[in-house]
Length: 339
Image 1: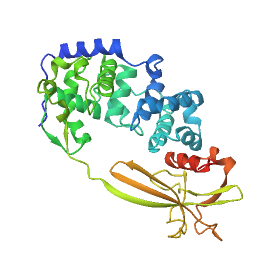
Image 2 (image 1 turned 180 degrees about the horizontal axis):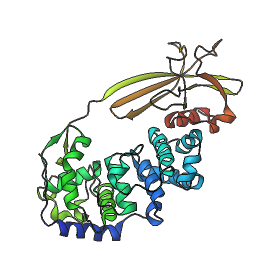
Image 3 (image 1 turned 120 degrees about the horizontal axis):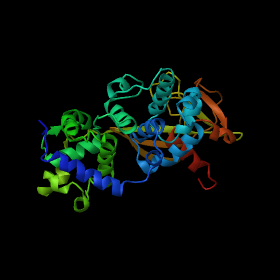
């Protein structure tokens, strides 16, 4: 059972907030805060690092500056602006959320009410309402779990970060500054992102080192204790086929649970890829618990397209369609003169 208390919580709050005010990163949603900017940043930061999402955030704000603009946009526009960030269900949920909010007579005032809206879980509800509305609700994500487990040197082994988050929520609530919950939550996130790293934490400059049992024991990296993930290896063969300045692509059905409506290079499930077809590239990537190896082979032009979702897309139109992030990179590489 995780520990649910910390000595001198008021001193911890003070040390954390003093550090945050002096050292926080200048981020656009902090420097020009609004409910909308907070919501968009929270959705984009799920599964994505700050440095990666910053240009996407700027582009998004230029195109869709408020909830009304986002609600009025079509899905194709939303997905195109999101292209490259991955986990596209976030974009769809953000779109649905905007439409739900503009239909309401007023902004929901509590974290519990926000959890009734599309795409909003406990963490997002706490982050949005504390930062934008001043609601005293503690955020508990993987970064915060890591901090709390180290502060208490908690040796409990958890199945995963999500289960640990539930257990550590009472401790997070007990440490929350009710006078300044938004800054407190952002300070915890900032501490996890910039100081209390998963590997090689910067304990010597940590503002709450005096409160940390893990640091006192000399082994902060031992916490939290999470069960090792089982990685499943997956191999996929992709087809590369050009004809008259057009590239053969597969459009993922709109009924698909993942990447609905987006384009990718066809796999051997969609078109015949001869075993001896020349290999153009081999690319590796990871998605959750999967280690994926994708082999791209050049194939001859088929006499007919065996799948209704296969289509020839002119090179000049590739920038107008929404390609999944890795496929955009691979196609760009392979279309270079020396690709």
